[in-house]
Amino acid sequence: MEKIIPITITPKAAEEIRHILQHKNIPAEYALRVLVQGGGGCGGAKFRLGFDKAKEQDEVYEYEGIKIVYEKRQLLYLLGLEIDFEERSTERGFVFGRKQ
Image (cartoon, rainbow, N blue to C red; front, side, top):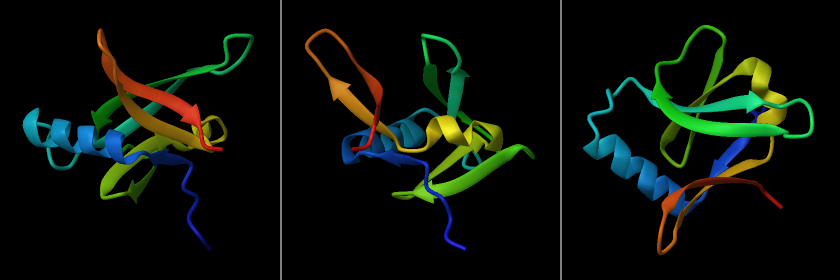
């Protein structure tokens, strides 16, 4: 059975994630955690990133050499999610969108 890849990462975001992993003392056994907040009502789901060890209720997979972890119960909110990284004149950070 083919493994579902709900979340993709753009090359720019992957570069930034690798930079964080290498320079911020993130333990080797940690993965990029994608968290879903909300999801119901008018506001929709909001997403956050962090680094964490996988837990029993998690799904783990690798994309572009980056281990990604998420809670299995949040899969429907994550399907088709793309993580990008933007740099503007006054701010920089990760942005979330739906892959077309």
